[in-house]
Length: 306
Length: 233
Image (cartoon, rainbow over all chains, first blue to last red; front, side, top):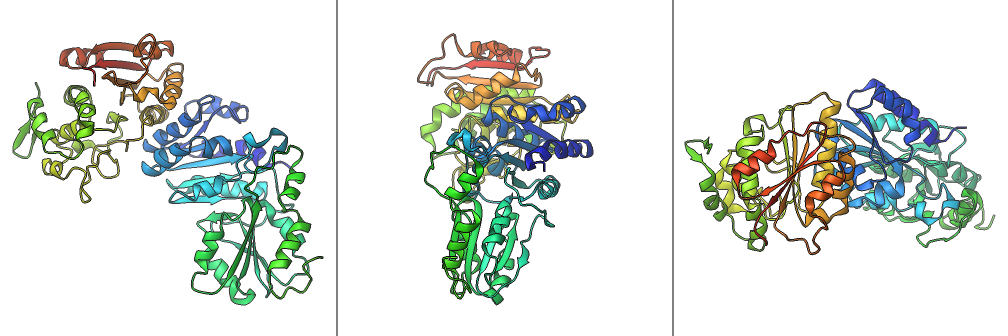
């Protein structure tokens, strides 16, 4: 199966062909995938070189002239390094863009922490008005990328990963999807964590919601799910643990509830290795998730230790 | 000197000090404000093809004030040119005023970018030039005003290094040099632009004819930088 990132350049090229407003702005990373697109649209495929502040500033200027920039590089360099540009050149200027990241949490563990940004979504949470898509499959990534580009002048973040679920689900760019219904808790699985969450909750009487658009947070879906499953909520996110805890708390502010946020740990692991080893180290493999979900949700039919 | 009319009053260059005096509360930025006065006036009075009647015109020139500190001269020029009412000026910096100590494009007609944090205008100007070119709008010119100390910001160097080789000939920068950078640039400010392939002119930033000549100097195939030297801060 191809990866979400393999899908990015071909889809973006089709969007360039279809919509004269679309521009792709790059800072070397991923540029080779746009060689053909650059020949066809030399003024709308822009590689600014290894200059990430300019990357976002230029996207802002493009947007201010009425264009729809798609901006791509690794999350560390797209969101973290030029964060003030994201805040001011887009948000403060009232300009929109589609930021498409790759390799955010630990897609390239051998590359080490310099190429990891598990805090990307939490960082964007300090800003107003961002839509955040976290696809869990290349097909979903394609759909959500199209939603993002079509979203007027909105500020949209699309978080691509090499981690993927085996099957794509229908995604609409807005709502959570109910995958399984139970009566002893709600587990929200974000993007590529779904397969592990489904394995982990096999035999547990919990509702599983699948989230690929996490901002805005689908509070209505979470509330509906708690009406039958109760208000024990576990969030499983492929980025910094607890990123969506505040959103879940806000959704349930007027009812007694408990929230457990699972995800990537804040402490730097300082290890190389493989994606699977990092998934396990952060407790995001099915076995670890089962222990933590069963241990937290009340009335689970299986003991905490499977 | 050209003068413009707003309602029944006309304003010229000699009115600017009185208009600036209507704004109080940001005196610490007084030198920053007056350093830009002549550059702003000559650009708005004789160079930029903009006006309050064409705020949304895609063919208009774009003026990006990157040096957002001390915007009193900027607001005075905008008032003189009819973008904002003169009676906005006394409210400068107050809760109900659209005119802050750093300008906000969402609040002030004719302001193309909100600025204040240094080093944002030139990269946005690069994107604006790229966006106009991609849409076949080859007439509008993009002007970015930055300060000499602001030039220290690395983001400006990213923009300068890109714009030359990218041949963004519609992009213009005016650096108002009041010698406020702590560490003087070896070789002078213009050298940095020249090294990146820009056309450059260094002039007396108080001499209106010299500024006009520098602003309108031809620079085919290259972006253009004008260093306007004024008295040290």
